[in-house]
Length: 166
Image 1: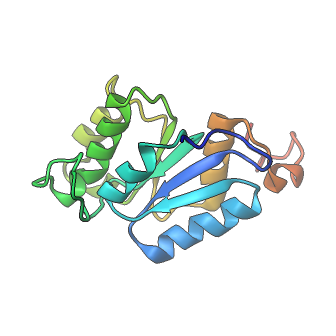
Image 2: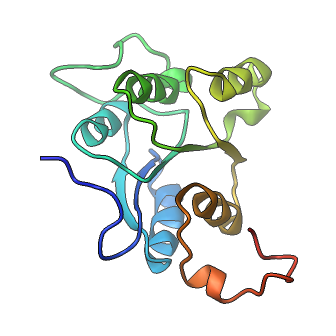
Image 3: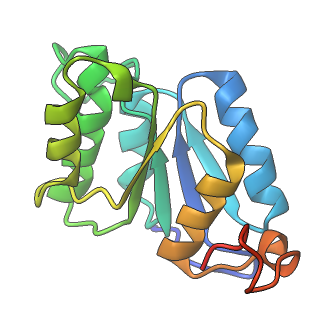
């Protein structure tokens, strides 16, 4: 049975992040905003979440451990810095058009220009790329843009405020 989109609370978000501290830095404030948040810490764990569920948005770290799987959907020889890309490929092969926001620290790597081009291309269709360490406001604004959800963060700002994101 597939879980679905916006319910009694806010939109359903999947945070795919292997670093527990960084995951907590995103999850708790997003829940405070009214988002329903699920987490995955490895590429295979992310695929297990994506298969039965329709998310309103996904926050994805590219640099992930593969993890263990009895029925892998991601090639076992995938390097760590490409595991998030393979999660995206799985998502798109599943014909899911879920908006994806990449939150990564790889933007300083020598291979970043090619990776960024791949992420923004037609196959993967990443809408936003946010550099780590990220500002929570930037993440919430990107999520607002892709889900249309206005949690308590937006109620605290006026439209003419330069800190407000439309």
